[in-house]
Image (cartoon, rainbow, N blue to C red; front, side):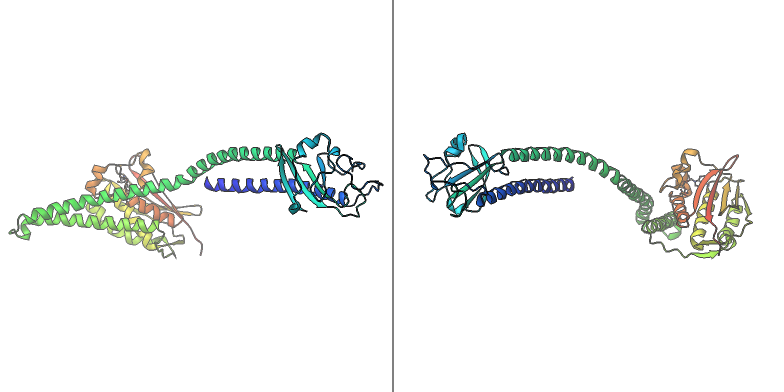
Length: 416
Ligand code: ADP
């Protein structure tokens, strides 16, 4: 708003000054012509009395065609006596109070007489001038500039009015532009605040538990460690939860600051899928669930193996967590055009449509109470999404019919 105001004011000031100076220039040009025409009178007319008194009106020359209509000429003698009183006609009543001021000789001035504006110049005409009316006298050329002054005033009014109208328009536009521009900033600011709140909340729960357990143990200083093994083990569980939470938070913060260093390399799926899958075979089987692996494609991909391993662990961990006993977890792959897809499917609880997009958000958990017991913080999929995005890939979830869900990770195939 302030910038607009400054711009408009400056622009208005410049335009007005240009207009004013060009008006005065054109008036002054007229004046110069008049001065020139007075100084070298072309019409040589014999005058009997070169110095007629006020009672003997000076014989007027033929009107100079170049002389503007609004111009008046006052002729003074050296003593400041007005010599051409009669030739002024009815203008005399207005101009009679004007006195000769020799200091103003050759100076262009704007004077106000009886609320009328005049541009004037006083010249001393040489004695050799052909017009005896002027010869050796002081001639004050006065041009009425009321019309120009009025025009300037009107212009000034229009300019101020236009300035205000446009300033108000600019005000409205800048308000909406600022709002539009601020939207993403406000959104990300809100997200940050929510993130910090959620993180604080997540940190508080394990800390409260640990504090409670420690305080409880302090009330029993004579007990042996074995007697308080449960309290110690609960505290340790919470410490490891805190550990994983802070690691996840650190990961996300690094992604946000784009300080995560990725070690990209050309590789094949078997080189990065095998390692993270291996331990899950035992874990899943030990939970009386079935684990099927069906990986058949070996395209060349350009990626950070460790990050993709981390992604795979998140997805397999979730599939294991959210699939009940006797369920099946499967990993398979396919090539779709220039994309390589690996899919982790399960026959678990499934995810309803309204949650499918939200689960990739930070701290989002579908069923908070259930997930609390399974140890999740709702950060795993947010990290997974960031990892895939850093690989110019795509991750989404779809239903695994008749029940369960399928997480599809799509990565671009590179040809080395
Ligand atoms: P969490 O640590 O809670 O598992 P995630 O970000 O990994 O956090 O997952 C977010 C939420 O998405 C989970 O809380 C869970 O409700 C849902 N979810 C993730 N994977 C699955 C899955 N395979 N089956 C059902 N729900 C899932």
